[in-house]
Amino acid sequence: MYFRSSSLILFCMPSFDFARAPHFDNLELFSSENENDYFPFHFHDFYCVSLITSGTEILKNTEQEFIAPSGTISITQLNEVHRNFSLIDSGYSYKTLYLNPELLRYFNKDKPVQALERVIYDPELFQNLSRLFDVENQNTTLWEDGFKALVKYSVRPDQKNLWTKSFSLIDEIIENYPNKQVDTEWLSKKFCMSKFHFIREFKKAKGVTPQTYVMLYRLGKAKKMLLENIPLNDIAYLNGFFDPSHFTNSFKKYFGVNPSSYRGPLL
Image (tube, rainbow, N blue to C red):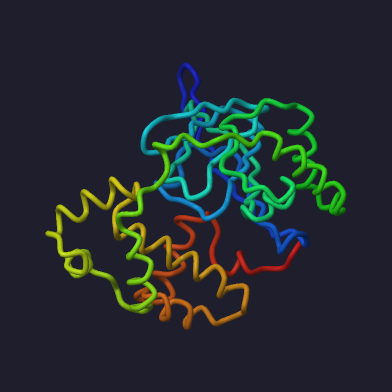
């Protein structure tokens, strides 16, 4: 990461912070300073609500890009394949809340939230959500008020951005072979397709390659196991990683923190 001047480029390394708040099933909080281009294409089984505190974020899915400048709230939808990067070389900073769709449903009077507005400009909501990252403001009422205001930005999703169900069997295959190091050619035979046709069609349907999908699915399971205090060696083996080092590197690549930090103490 760097800042440009007329005669000099000064490098500034990004910093990441992760925590779990003692509310609503240990809500996850993530923040980054001076980030430019860190995460590859990936997806989450929750909503990412990012407060852009400086710079400008570009959120890119498989079809289009969205621009979120400082002071706005950037939304990544549930299960959306995406990546995030900075508009300029000097990077951008943000604070992110990871929200379970059931939590949003609860604050939406038990109505499912199909999607949220992509970029929200609401200074009052921005300020209120920012306060949730302050360890001295960990009271339930503050959280509830913030979520009630957020669900007012519910919208109908663009139907063409929804995943197709062509490869729904993939989850069952991963579950049936939990510690197998999945080979793409082996996997393509399960769908009675040639290797390259399978990769091409799978990416059309899911937005990522089969290998990336398997990796993210297994890392999602590993996150839950970490909170159960299962040893890292066992988690790596049970989810098909070569060794604990391979698991740790993969976890940090996609989630920005190492496994030990993820299951660290609450705020």
